[in-house]
Length: 453
Image (cartoon, rainbow, N blue to C red; front, side, top):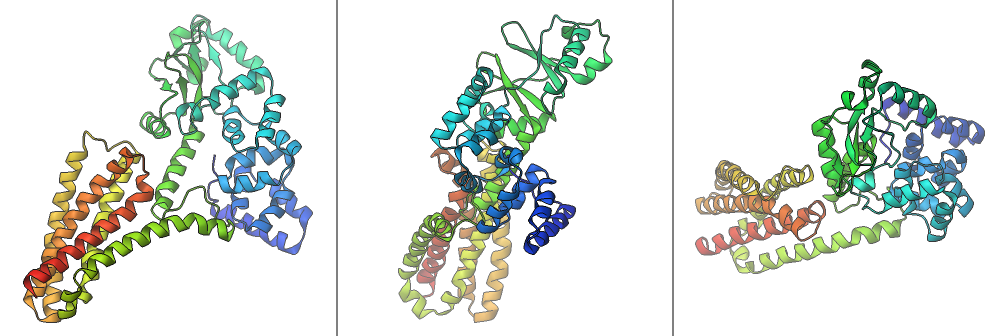
């Protein structure tokens, strides 16, 4: 899970809490803090510099520790876990839902993990092992193994009596009961609304629906989110390759997937991770960002080297130095538009090898139209500015070439990077900038060398 940003009302409550903390009224601050929801406390913790964060964490009631940890980003969670002793950690995570525990236990020290496993009963241990058998970003990793199942041959009256006996044991966000046969194979779902409105003497088989398709445990998180969106699901059953029920996914977990994906796309364009702590230590942040700064420096040197190949041309026609950034900038913007569209298409499953060619031709057509329009505009400005129609013609043709190259790179790069196992959101922007800079400079300075010198 991740903590959502607060509303305007929550902002005021957080401001009041900050004021109380600054006044040193710790008891009052603790009461105000523990009146918040776990996700709100997690957001507050992420919003604090390290020292203030430690203070706020010390005021949180121990009974909320485990749930709060599940809402924190990886960096902040790791920092707080490192400050807790073994007993605190075992107590904090012992009462978590199986899916939350599966996410959290992977971040715990090995010694703590073994203590946590020992503290679980046999059933919970088996459920946890089932969840841990799948990657975190898969349906199996997202699922919760706490499910309520019924058989198709029993009557609705029997099911009602069964639910009354469960009382508080009914899992959160339960909108249906999962129907399985004696071997545990998924058959369908019985919605609670149908359970309440149908004749109690009817069997589950008569009232259940077959319309809800089970999600394979091997599906990726993106596929799961798409299924929930397209079918307006609140919960969905998860099955193994043989169709045997493993657990269920709830909409709150899917919302986390969608939020994390959005943060990844947004921060990835700057070479940042969505799990990075805003108030992480200086050296840690510097080390993480150094990689992409180094990569960008190499691409900048490549562009500079290209410019250096045309040094004599630039010395003879000074106007070229003034106009070069225009060519590179126009290509960069056009390429970024196409790149962003393609990355989004991959993220939501709309772009694949089957329709990539259509997108490519469409983006090239758009680039062709825009290149003609803006080439004329820029050429007119250059002709007026420098009084040289040849310079105007050269920059117009160069912009046309660079916009077409930008569209080509923007459409093809995401799929090519994904095929090589490289995250397009992280690497796409850097590579695209290199392409548009190099192509733009070669086109502009090359044409100038041919026709102006």
